[in-house]
Length: 122
Image 1 (cartoon, rainbow, N blue to C red):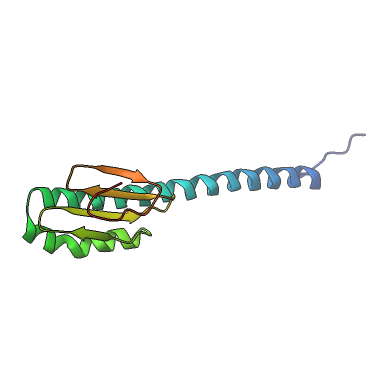
Image 2 (tube, helix red, strand yellow):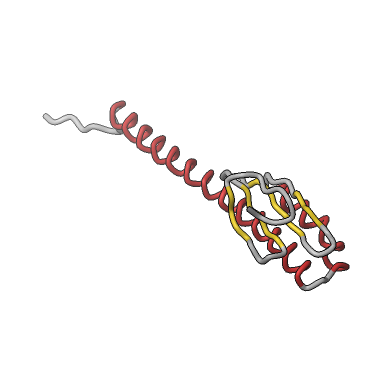
């Protein structure tokens, strides 16, 4: 007479748990990478907003949105540094994925490996 088996064996359950753990680990790594890229994109967007405001000479708009821009950059792990003279400017911030992003009055906007100094991006 055959005996009917009900349920799963311990080995089968352990294999399923191991597979789920591996998949969860892969998802967590990808989510972390996506989150850092989103933070980086937000910082780059805020720096581009600074450049747009300054190039269009909307000083009142820039002054009104400065707090929002600084908050956007700091909430995403960056710090805004600026260099302004009568005719030139440079704004930059470190990026969560490494390096710095810099915009300046000569039209340069790029990612660099070093902290930009002076009135223009390196």
